[in-house]
Length: 589
Ligand code: MSP
Image (cartoon, rainbow, N blue to C red):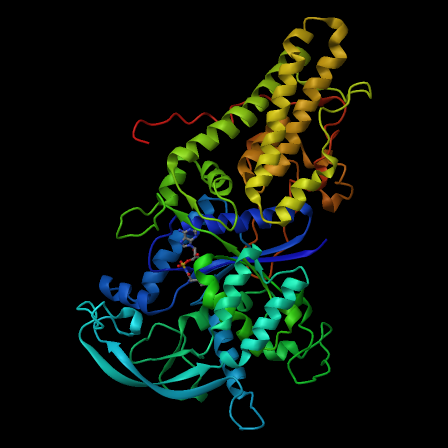
């Protein structure tokens, strides 16, 4: 069993969730479920990014306190993840006290670590810098904001020159290290960024790096953030990215916000003090290092500079060794007719309304099959309906319905294990291809493997015509074999599809009357999940509190069960009920 720690970007709470947010969380959920399917110990962390200027302004506009404002939007995100069956283990909300403590402890550690040559902090310095400031928009302006005439437009006015003192985090000193690190990971066959076509993009950006990162904002212009520790002097709030990125460590089970990362790094897993060396490298306590390092699932817009530049340098500063650096899984974007979704264009797709209209499983299915991980795709309801009808209503639903109906009609629903004279219709050999494809995050191709197997079985039924075999008593063995293999193929397709369609997979298992204790893997009483009757539905037991990952009862689906011959001799199938009713195309779509 291995450990799998997966995170997503934490979403800004200045607006309701849209389909892009939903895509990322479902993608991470599918990968987490796949690892649970393999029997890995999984911790899936997601959450919300609640601080910053935009939230402060939106809350002011509505005349509510920022905390009230973010609580309201946070509730919308959580309700959506429940509706879409996004089953996370840890919830990262940046206004959580635990996180605030962690951010402040990290700042303090970085501030306290002296460069022996200067006697100053090795990582953070204070300086005063001047720039043009938009009083209307409450932000500093760069040349990007200048119009064609070289002036700042009326939307920024009044604009004034302001001198401001802030704290800066050293980035450019680490440029060579970062380039070498990126190259080494690529050379080792374990690229820092996947899909690896983005590595070049990141390398170029790092090559151009020539500045440091301003990590504070004067409290006079931003109050809604984490205050700097008092030792920095009064009146500074943490820049939102320096706050948000830290969620990836502050919510890891076993993390001690009081100890901070550096003190963690100097402890061994047994609690003994490790050989200090430069005081940074060392073993993390066992629970933290059980999970770390992470796979960070993020969108292409936040790879540069936040996750590809700031974050590795921050981790380095916090004492993480090169082999403790995470991996970035960078996904593409859902667009609308080739254009970005935006409130001003009025083309934002609401996943909540979509799930109400078509069902959560149809939305999950489309989000996973309609895009190749790493690439962009165009969102269209018409495609959602087409994919659903073609794959689920036709291929899978049809196989389920006809197999159960015929087994009931011709064999009273009871199946025998076929003799060697009747081999299975195709080889599955442990579904190696499925595993390899999933390890490369190509979820859409994995779906094709699972649904393709059902499609193939439909052809197998057509070729063998059970309705004709049933008329000839001398074909009884063949009739049983065809229906046995069709039912067993459905069981396997349900397992392979369970990361994407957890409810439908439970539905198929229920109709097949497949119980956990029938699994040859269920050898020990602890390994067995309680048997579920169809009436129990498919409620999943969730453990949501941080630090409780892995404490679930056994999963109902196991990749190891995806082999021919799983249905025992004399197995009694359940009754067919339509699982994927066709979606009729409404006129306006
Ligand atoms: N709060 C930051 C992330 C901090 S992570 C430490 C942020 N939030 S966001 O709400 O703007 O975006 C959250 C995620 O949604 C990002 O990974 C982003 O790429 C993703 N998406 C936003 N729009 C998207 C699409 N249209 N399509 C797919 N994903 C997109 O950035």
